[in-house]
Image (cartoon, rainbow, N blue to C red):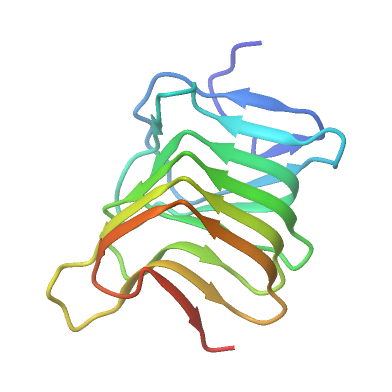
Length: 165
């Protein structure tokens, strides 16, 4: 059924395919409540990445279980929530975040996270004295993370930073 907005909470078995764009968003948290048998999919069409705006004020966060976010174009993305597990970001582009820090972040407690086949690029000015990383795994009790077959480049900090806790 066509919609004008992406629901903030998606239940097991939900498949949301976003078309058109670009879309302008402020900070948003998607709660993706899939199950092992009925995961949640939030995606753009195959071969086409849906653009979700640009700017330092856009922070997309995914919390929940058994979900895949794919074929999206974002300036920043975070996996969060101490009970969040079995989440994936794949076939997407995360780029040109004008703020500070990282473009893909894993926060304390997330488990079984897959970051696959993404382009993560152009975070920060090069050369720069400030660290602007591609992917940051920061916090305690993070486990079973796979960062596979990504193209991470042109960031003024590390491609992948394992840090602090």
